Image (cartoon, rainbow, N blue to C red; front, side, top):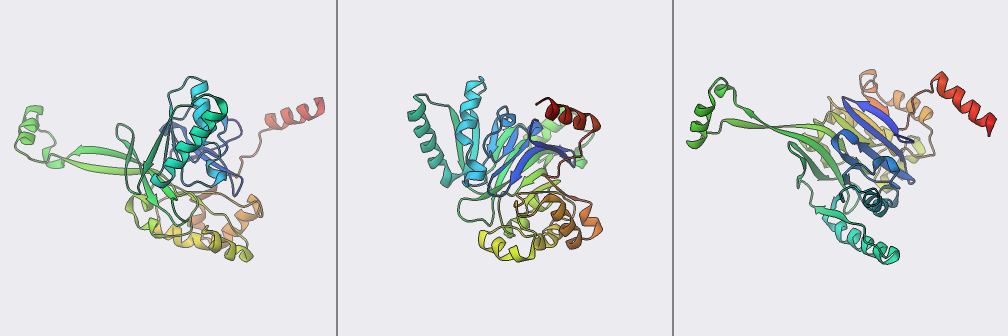
Length: 295
């Protein structure tokens, strides 16, 4: 997917780019969902649903371009799912762009409250939840919802099940599996008390700061510092964790060393960085060398 870095975490394919204060966009293409939009890289235009965690420019600057490009290439209008307090502002933004371009880019802006489910397709919903990053900031969980026959009714015929339902008997029970949770920018908070968050297969979590002298920066900006990760991981003991939003003040190699000093071996095995690029193959290295020589 071009410049976006691809990861497969606990069976969920993700592709994204995230640097604090510059750009954050994390796509789950097979789920048809993108968390935040960054500057709307071309790789996300085909994805129909954007879950916008908050209105900061590094997460939201590309909203208008995303909707415009979907229209330009002939796709159905994109959907932007955001906090209800942001929906009106995004509508006004699209109105300003319509005045500038003398053309309206269609889009569906869905303003929601925390814990208000949004259907994505049959059996799949997005559930927003409040996070600790100021007003109008939310995280999102992608939840697979199924109805399963209760064990005591397994083996009964179709007509028997229909008869039971007519009698008012509940023959199914509802099950939920959280495939991936994206917290957006946030400090630690009560959101980790939600079962659907802490039982997520994949947690995409910001961890902006790693240096000891940056703890005060983390607290002031309501961001996570590496010293907060042990507590977060205890809250979600079965989740695979993907870290995003690393500051440029710390490079990934240094951050990995600091992380290893902060976590035990078992936790290190389930934590990785989105921006930790895979090593280049020999073919890629040769191609890059040839391109520089020919330039």
